[in-house]
Amino acid sequence: MPAVSCLRPLCAALLSVPLAIAALPAMSADSGGSSSSGGTSQSAGVTLASARGQIDAGDYRNALKSLAVIVKAEPRNADAWNLMGFASRKMKQYDNAARYYETALKIDPKHLGALEYQGELFVLTQQYDSARANLKRLQDLCGSCEEAGDLNKALASAGQS
Image 1 (cartoon, rainbow, N blue to C red):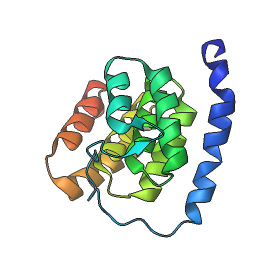
Image 2: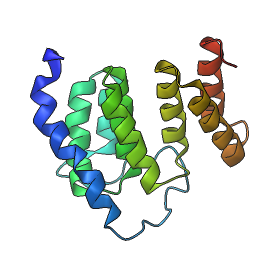
Image 3: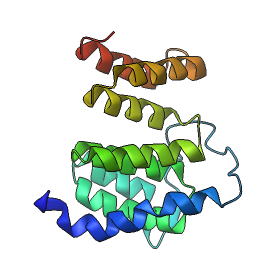
Image 4: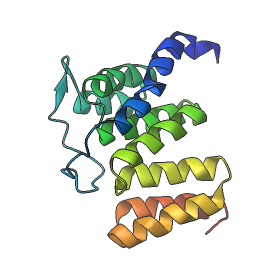
């Protein structure tokens, strides 16, 4: 992974944040298990909306940098952790992606986006039973919502429907 070696110190610092999260008081469920928070929160001039824009543009490396600023200021921001997982997964940094999704789901166990994206990571890493468990959880939470549909499509594409 020579292309991302400049991110190693950032990743090392971020991997210690989940330990700190466990010591924080429980977060109110203001996201209600949704896959986004609207991007109105600002951390050092960086917004969730601007990080999403970087992701939409395929600029995953800079999105990770922006999201790192957000989670440093707001360690219980499940949406930011979820997007860090997404960007990491797109960069094929599967171990980091897994940790970020786990962190998002510790903060908000009903986070639809994190359940979908973690399930898609499970499909990529051929952990089909885990992906199916995420699909079942999504269906229990939201029926036939977009997130459940997308994960179901990913499983079907892998011949695992």
